[in-house]
Image 1: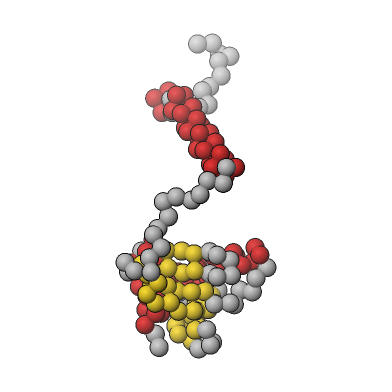
Image 2: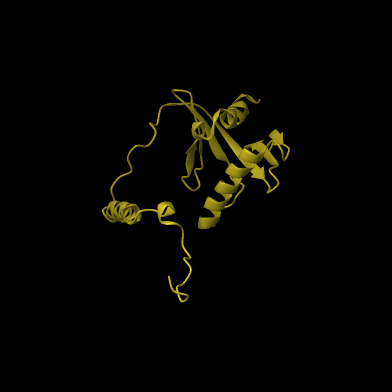
Length: 155
């Protein structure tokens, strides 16, 4: 080795990711983007969505929240159904922010009610009739689903 040799500035050869793996990763990414592009351009219908069972119970609710995690749930007449402190209302406040963002995109009022629905098969969901946004709550865990399920039972 000469005194003019430069020091090695990258990882040891055994710590390097093989080139074939890096190329495979970028190739897979390109294939996924191509599939999504083709599906979008050809207006392919959405598949693998949860089944839309019969609505057993539905309640119109208004969600309010803030960045601290505090949240309040009102019924359609403005009566408070639930009031969550900042350490208990994070999920409800998070859902409220998502709905507010979706409504802001189209310039809609953030205070219109959303529909809390219990469907056949014990599936609980939220639906925003203003934007068409919806969420199946079972995907957020049992405790978060219970939080909204209790709102259906409130007088």
